[in-house]
Image (tube, rainbow, N blue to C red):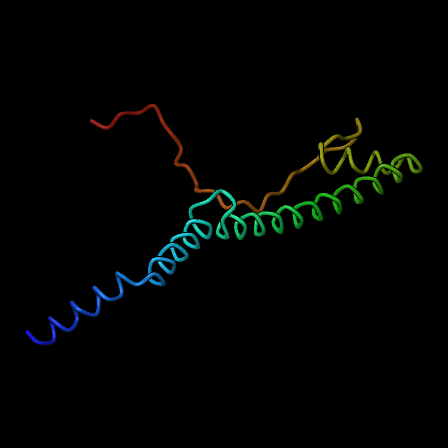
Length: 119
């Protein structure tokens, strides 16, 4: 009981202290600015992470752009390159050719359906 009384006296002394009130206001202010505000540190961290993701995506698109520009220049210089792209991407062929498309896709074999009924 004596311990409880001393704790109560200590808490009351702290509560009446001017410095305690300033400390509580400062802690609440830091929490408000740090986590709850629109310009909080948490949002700043998320925005920084999003910026780095967007910059890596930008680099990827720039690399694709450079590759496509090189391919366009090649198509303008070499008419055989257009024929190559038409054959590879769009499966176009000349009149005297046959094209066989081989696929590595793993597909389940479907059983053949018959119209016979088992009775």
